[in-house]
Amino acid sequence: MALIEAIGLSKHYGAVKALDQLDLAVEPGIIGLVGANGAGKSTLIKILLGILSPTSGRATVMGMDSVRDTRAIRQIVGYMPEHDCLPPDVSATEFVTHMARISGLPRTAARERTAEVLRHVGLYEERYRQIGGYSTGMKQRVKLAQALVHDPKLLLLDEPTNGLDPTGRDEMLDLIKRTGTSFGITVVVASHLLGEIEQVGTYLVAIDAGKLLRADTISSFTKRTPVLAVEVEEGADRLAQALDQKKLRTRLDGTRILVAINDDTVYDMIRDAVANLDLPLVRMQQERGRLEDLFRDAAPAAEGIQ
Amino acid sequence: MTTQTQPVTEAPVHGATEAAPAIELKHAARWYGNVVAVNDITFSLGPGVTGLLGPNGAGKTTLLHMLAGFLGPSAGEVLVLGRSPHRDPSVYRQIGLVPEREAVYPFMTGLEYVRFNARLQGMPDADKAARDAIAMVGLTDAQDRAVGTYSKGMRQRAKVAGALVHDPQVLLLDEPFNGMDPRQRIAMMDLLGQLADRGRTILFSSHILEEVERIGTEILVIVAGRLAASGDFRAIRALMTDRPHNITIRSSDDRRLATALIADPAVFAVELQSDRLSIQTSHLSAFRRLIAGASRKADVRLLEVASSDESLESVFDYLVRR
Image 1: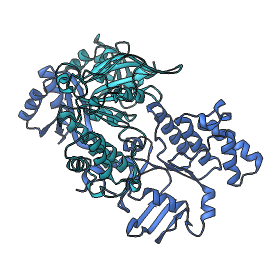
Image 2: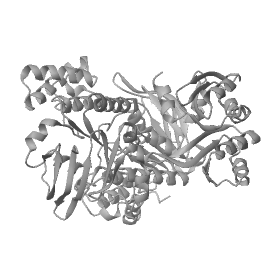
Image 3: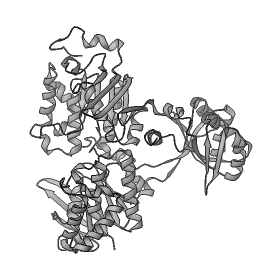
Image 4: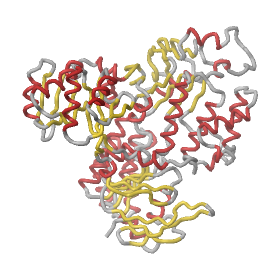
């Protein structure tokens, strides 16, 4: 059974079709959810949480219907919203305990779970201070902690690294990865940063204009292509010339020379050409597909308009 | 550029562009009470794109606000096109600022907002300038909608159009990609590149190092209010002589290649990993010249050669985690 399933899912706001006959089946893992602004990501998340009801079609989470079984779904789903939603005048401990109580945990269990979850997200002494004085990174951790406190099976994260600096981002991504792999919780990460999704995700769901653009494993997007990129510190033109003479198919791309790999002797020809010309070899690497290509090719003329 | 509405001071901005660098800081500092946000920073920038990097709270926004003329330095000098921008509206004509915070009135349409900026800058044909700027950021289809109905990425682009409308020499952007989707990011990166090609000086702050690396190689790194490094990040990397360079290699026979490489003085560590070799060298250029010949001599097929710590990400990491 798919963890999340959408069948002919549509949501219209007046004339605007936020979701348009979306069909989707997602297996457990760490799933990146990408799409242009206004593509329908937030609408999909809100339908899965039972906050919005679909205009037509249906969505299920672990076989439960998003409209009929809303309460049951909320027990197994944790949600980390994108916007700043934390009360400034309580401590992280108080806030997360409160959220645990709302999820129906008894007082003692709520307290214990809160302590565990805050440690997991990396909040220690700070947890007793008021949230208003927290840095962006600490606030993001509190948001993640409240989403985890009731031990959900599915975690929905909306732009979890927003506003974080490079170190903070790395830590948050690491935390997401650990949460997904060691606790076996399925994590859906909505993000605009494709590099980030490449780093943590196992599966990618791309939606565009309310329809499914593509859904596949991350590795299928980033697999090696039969093209070798060669970079030298100097003399790229001479190297390209030498390779052309050996009847290799090459193309100059900025400072890089792209060579088609017809068979394994290509590697030797490049090595020998570099050695003969006595050039400093910076890089020789098979080109990989990039998640970004998904958006480069599909870019319509009226780009980015909602 | 356009006619100045009021030449307030004696030296016109134009005359200054020839001699002075577009942006120059001389021992500039800014403190708020006891909090030192920017501490004794000296650098100068010319045309092109430069990425302004640093952890949260390092002083990036304070620096941009000093350059935009919002704040005067507490000590030292901040110069844009050779003149202090603080409280000098004639310098503002040459500066465009995209602030990080929401700075767009929600009740205005995109076009109204940009036209308002054009009039503020004394443009003779504000309407045309506004429409051109809106087209440049790809918002024409939405220009007559209220900004309040825009998505985050659209508001961000409206801000960029507002900052560009008077075609300033110097463009300052604070986290411009925030909230933009992948397609909009690509378009905005291309736009900044085009403006740089036309001789504009662009300084933008960002936390997304992969993106900064794709736009350009010039960076300015601020850590705790101080300038940690400036210039081409590859040159900065080359100066870190205390950090050996890591190179990974895949080949047809890693063990044999390892034996051949360790014989050379340029190589000081070789580690045999499951499917690759990890090599440390302090003489990067010497190693790069060596590798192809050495593997040919050892009769080993080279499958992959890659650096693992030459990226902006590693350079930044080395600078900040010192």
